[in-house]
Amino acid sequence: MGTELNKSLSICIPTYNGEIKLRENLMHLLPIVSKHNLPICISDNASTDGTEQTVKEFQERYPYIFYDKNQSNEGYDRNCYKVLRMSKTQYAWLVGNDDLIVEATLNDVLIAVYGDQEYILINVNTNVGEGKRVPVGDTVFYDYNEWMLKIGSHLTHMSGIIFNGKIFEHEDAARYYDTDFLHLCLAYNGAVKSGLSVKWISATGTILAQTAKNETSKRAFYLFVLQIYKCIKLFNKIYSKRAKKHFIETHFAYLNGLYFILFMRECGQVNLFKYLGHLKAIHYMLSFKMRWALFISCFLPKRFLHFLRITRRKIINRGEKV
Image 1: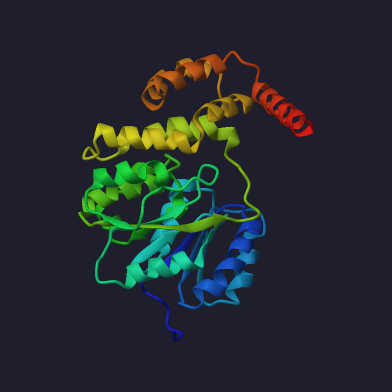
Image 2 (image 1 turned 90 degrees about the horizontal axis):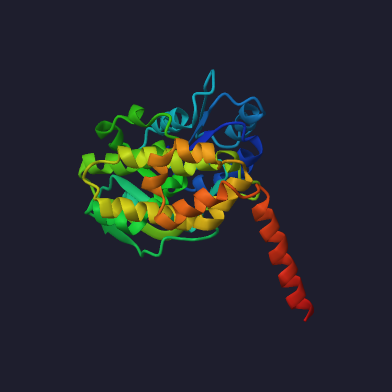
């Protein structure tokens, strides 16, 4: 390929104080995207670390890195939308700081992008929930309920979504500010209003970087119960109760249900006060068994999960000795 900037696909990375992860990501990306002259758009949410210097360093190596820094932290949703709007290409692949694009899958995405059929979204598989992947082969969805029934909550993972720029003509992103999952709402609702089909690529699109860490444990209940509940209530009315129920089931399957509840208790996210204060969301989001498990967990010691881990390890060690 020549030196002309690719006008079909951009890689869009929202970042905040992610200097180390961003460096690893750009080192991985440059040899891949340079083969196709793909632009990389980076929106910095007022980082206080060396993110800006890191980007400038890589801009000297690759001319198609476009960077903008917010004067103040605008939150994930606004920064996410901003980086998508920085893209001037037909499609924009939203990628997390700590998610590394798989080159073979990028090639599959480019085949879809360059093809004759236009899609409002291209979804790629990702390893979520301890390596769990969506067991659906390559396909095109024309029915949005079928899409949600097959893909479920997979779209909570931002790095599995490639947006067609037309989606911004059909959907008001401001509705989803402060949901922490703008990408999820924008995808499911924007697709419906566009009337265009959705391409699903079953190959894994991204893998976690070595520097990736779980930074959401202190917000687990808030993010994965309350905020997801908020998103579901914002979903377009075209989505059936059955499709939404499947979304919720796959969401908690990825989170490993009961373990997730005990994990939230261990992190201090669950107590009787919070349980009683969010009964409506809990009743909607959790099955009868999980609601009871959550209620009972409010009375368990915070270190109960830690105790179970130690007990399990002792049992395994005894078995190995025998």
